[in-house]
Length: 489
Image (cartoon, rainbow, N blue to C red; front, side, top):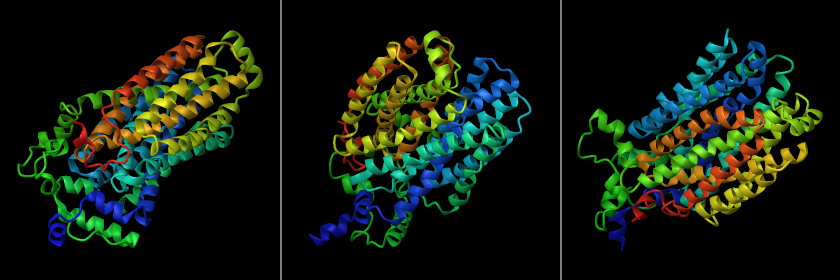
């Protein structure tokens, strides 16, 4: 028995389960959270500067919407780029090239945006900011690879709290700064948090899972030993073993098949595009396409509701009975108040998601929450007063944000380590298309007095999303990351 243990040693999942969620994971959570915090601030400020910029430069509604679309277009390219950097060269190298590049891009472009002399330069600067912000998904992929599987879903939801805090801080800053100092000061101050991520990036260790899949076992062991030291725990007895050593005796797993071979030196082309080949292998193709659609819907619905709330609150819609109600009840400052309330509404959404994600599983939780979102939005098809409109939109925001927070967990868990950042990075890139399309279509329907049509469109895509979740191939709750793809047969 002892010889057997010595021969087999332990796996990454066994090591993380033994070490538990300790001081190291707490620090990793804070670091990854700062990345989400910064992203959230930069994205949510779009709701606040749009009306001010429109007024200053006499922009058309389409030009105002294009400002948001430029940011999401930059994030589309950035999400694609940083995901492949991460899977090809490592999470930490993605941070060396990425986090620091992201921080520099976000701080530089954010600060330069504040000094934009005209509309065109502002669009260009915000595009480059979006390209940097597109790397934000690597933070959560990196954090995921240090978390024990037993409560992985809960901790991946906790990291989403940083996003909400960033949104709430941005709404608070806008509330204070916009009426007094104007939109340029808001842009400048919102660029500062990225400097914190830049400074902390020097202390980021590489993901042991990434090192492991590349055959760099000794380096992975060193990282785990550091985690054990900080957590004041002991690693399991024996040595960290190569996945192939442990499982070649059994039928080859899908992950074993997909993982790039360390015996052949990959060309530069293969290094870059191996993760893409994996994503469209016969085993992962359906999952990838379903995730792409749901990621698109995520941003389309999320920012559609956010921009709808801000549009209605600021009185930009001029639509008969609806506008007459809103114009009586909303003043300019209510744009900030209602946005703050909407962001705050995401917190109970995360609590709801936390109650279900590790109990009911990822798939059933998403199906249930999406259906509740459909039901909550149904009254918007009829004429209701302004208070009810806000309450329904915020309620829908709550349950849909919970569903899509769980989707973000599932999307990272479902891929093998060798393609995780690329897989979710591409899904994030597709998600940004929803952010590009949403201001140009959904919100224009609201501003053009077609609220009912907008609601019908939102409801339809949610119903299609439920069907997509049903067709996901398997549940990831409680599975070790190394086993997830191997169990799809």
